[in-house]
Length: 181
Image (cartoon, rainbow, N blue to C red):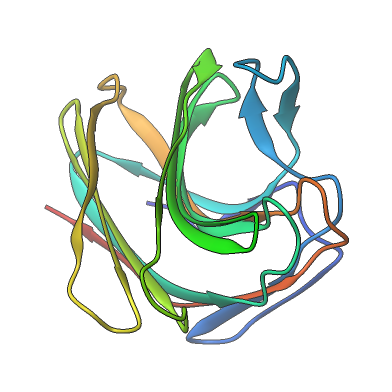
């Protein structure tokens, strides 16, 4: 494990002992080709390298307001092999969202059934299997997705956010915890 470093650092961010606050920049996103035809690798991610099996948990709040405003976590090898999970704001509704990219991005969403205050995510890596769980407003974690992810020696993990269509928004991450298993 190493200390986190920025992939596409935002202009405004602040880290304390227990929080990371980010103001996203406009026209930032992570996406590869599918449906839209474009390739974007400009979102903000604060990533640390880890090897082997692990559990990674974080909690976050956001002032989502524009179409596709998003925040959560990212697991990454490179621009063509990554995933992001979290909240994405879609047509006025907060959606639990997962995008998996193996050269081409896919996307799954599920509407949050209540007024959103906070989101907690847990990503677990066991060899080639990734499990993503999510919960809102302090509620229990529930399975969002289990997927295949190539078993490479080292990956990067950490908070992610972006504003593909809007002017940017503020996200506060807390409880970031990486446990090797």
